[in-house]
Length: 323
Image (cartoon, rainbow, N blue to C red):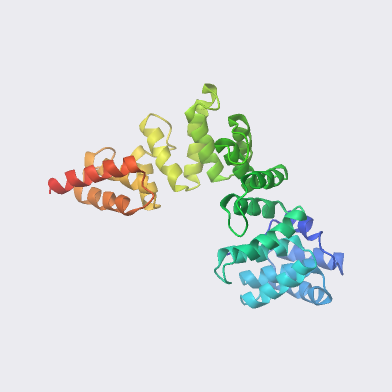
């Protein structure tokens, strides 16, 4: 998993550490990283890391984890992350937690991840606050505590973290750990949506379309849904297809086009609706064989909603009976 941090955030979080040996040297290494000169970044940072600078240790960890300027080496990456993390470097604490959560290069360990995220969150690391909030919401590695999750999301959101803003919007939307509040939900979803968060764009569009945020905003639903669909969020592609079917601007794509995109991206609802388009000749030439293929794919997915599943089963039967 690539974890190339935004450089400004790197400097802010790394300032929480203790072993700062050479400010100019670290700045030079970071400049090389920003320019894509990874070998030079490694060469400059290596002696600083040996001297104990936690920022340089973290940078070496990033380069080793991602195979930038050096051969990818997770053992070296973890070693440098741990050295920096023990000095209080919040970025390294977050990096170790993310690896423990992913369970790809190291053993998955939710409790270990939560422990490191707590330390990083205490140092004001917004991404760690957002990630820790998700663990408290789901009860992974910690006891489930929606109120604490909401508080962590709020801290991350105020700091400008798009994931924190998105999740804070969702907790206000659903009333998880806080009093349900559509106005606050719309506010924070908008913040995240403006940062390009596709999930926020999708949920903001649904909120606007529902009228819960005020009827005057319904006309803006298609705009945000279109942005989420163009970001290739599968469920947004399906929803965009439905909106286009009702007359919304599909950005040059028909409803069937969006359903096909959603189907190919693996969205079960999109697969069913694309099968309908093929079966009915709605935006596509009739093709019962291909329609049967897609409706079977939809039915094989556990995520297909009960009402859609019933309709898909009915379509499958009709197609099979038609030969």
